[in-house]
Image 1 (cartoon, chains in turn purple, red):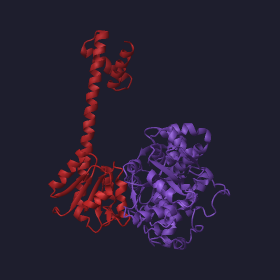
Image 2 (tube, rainbow over the protein chains, first blue to last red):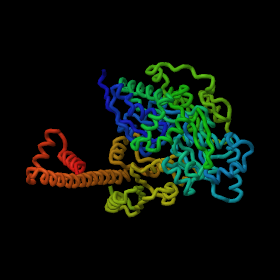
Image 3 (cartoon, one colour):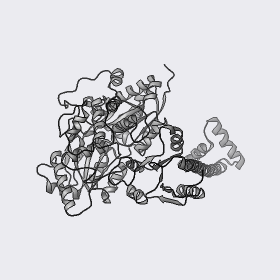
Image 4 (tube, rainbow over the protein chains, first blue to last red):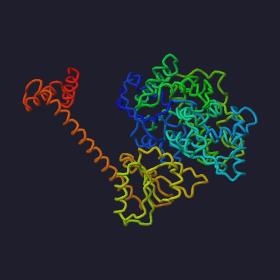
Length: 391
Length: 196
């Protein structure tokens, strides 16, 4: 035993992709590792970032791009972050109002379930609104440095929609998304579970896409700690990652699903009905008010198919989006620093090297629906292939 | 540092009492242009319309993430706004987060000009949570008092004890069982109701 602190404070946002963290604590995997963890429910990503940065939290359930932005010092104080474990891949969805859904359907040249078709249809809707002198559409997302922001931009820009010129991207806290759709403040949003389902259940919106239809593998949330903390508490750090490894396995074991949904649905955790969490974990969502369902085995991946193992290619992809949209300058140093946030080496040394990814997984590690394969060493090349960009 | 009446300050806080306490403090310090937003619908548009130099927001407010969008310049932004803190400022961010408040200022505004504003807000936020804590304690004490009085009444009736004897009995039991006297009182009430 070292002199590390074994008493930890960890922040989370009430979302389904906090599952591995919540199960690690509430199911006793952290305790088995000798850790005494207090989970603290947070209301905003800004709070999460600040409380992690100044040491009020030892670890955090964090948006993957925030971990990178913090490490690069983008828009805020520079605090190097280490992400040794992915809490989830994918899990977001794009939801649109019934009106916008109808407009997209009217303009679709092909199957609207195909993101190429839907992105082009959106471009047509945008052009039509402009001709008629109507206000631009508003798209809600959860945070400036969020997967949601970059996923929406990637999708719509491929169809010729400029997210900065042709419509408005607005940040909305997830619990306000549904209200904002019903009050007409936004026409669409990209958010994680359970908020898409809540809007569809109310009959006011359609789920247009699971984000896994846009990117086959997209690192969504990471377990994040300060690099300095990891260095000062090596033993506790290892225990924490081990507890997460066990928790993710437990979450992915289908026979535990009911118990997991019960644990996650507690008021002090995610605080929604177990059934809603179940749909998310099963990847089977009601996508239209009339009751159509869509099912995907890639909707939210907690540990399966190497989902928990950090991949620097994913960090590079997110950094590339930041550069593309003018949110970060391009430099080799920053690219290297971004990749260094996602610590495959630490994951492997603590949990053992994962098996190579099966052939079902995309060769470039991302699997985008449009554009050439992603090369994480050539960010400039990647961005140059896109007409719509701020770089 | 002299107050700077030219600064326009927006307070985003869903607690009207705390916002009023903050507003008073700012006015006392000579700031005349203070606006309180309590409803966060369409927050970014409202903040842009007011065009403030400083925005203060409480950390319990999920809409803090909305303000973060001001960093990422897009075409709706009239002028960039940056967080109060920079690399050299970890102690003030710590104090602010501990107190439960965050501040955003217009880019280029010298931070010395608003240091006293943040300091004042931090101390008022801390004072407010102390007050809230004391109020909560007073409420709990009052509730406990009521429970103890009821249990005392039950004991006096059922065991023909004097008021003092009933209280002594509860206190002794609480000490023996290492529990709070209010918890013992609650058990007596529960038991009495079951045995009715």
